[in-house]
Amino acid sequence: MPNTAPDAVVSNAGFTCAESLEHLDDDVWASEIAINLNGAYAMTDPIVTAMAQRGAGSSVFISSVNGLAHFGNPAYSAAKAGLIAYARALAVERGAQGIRANAICPGSVRTPARDHRSAADPTVLDNVLPHYPLGRMVLPQEVANAAVFLCSDAASGITGTTLTVDAGLTAGNLRFVDEVLRGK
Image 1 (tube, rainbow, N blue to C red):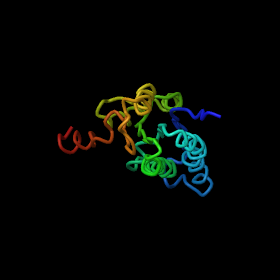
Image 2 (cartoon, one colour):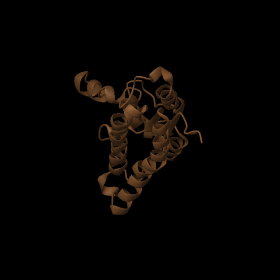
Image 3 (cartoon, rainbow, N blue to C red):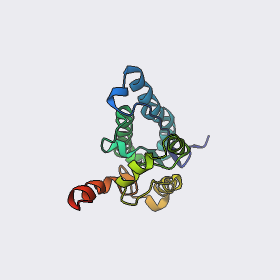
Image 4 (cartoon, helix red, strand yellow):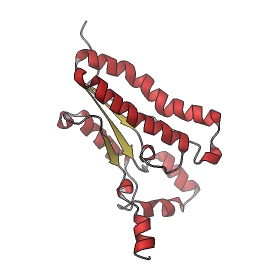
């Protein structure tokens, strides 16, 4: 029977409700780890195993800038950092079997959930956007484009890496430059 594993798998689950440590308890921690980290493992492990048996495949995890630095959401952040570590483990341990694994770390993405939050508080973007050098949130298509690239032959030599798609958020602190250094 031929191996019918897909050429690529993209894990794009994400959920958070605990914005700071004050909102965190054991149940919230367990729930956010289960959805954001354990769910990604449960979905990708059998697929990656089949791809490795075939000798080729690409796995992309949609992590978050929260996995790189603290922007709130502590349980979500821990889970997203775990995805980065898992992608690296796959890259190292399954590379000889033709598996490439990478993570994408978006900043704030313009999704219906974000639009709902903006509708509830029309000033929320006034507080968020000054932190982004491009002055805007990331579009879902921009994250999808990065995933397509990492899954494609154009990225055949890329594995174990983290690609930020964050409108410049992790490049540096624009608000610090503007307020502290420029005195605006």
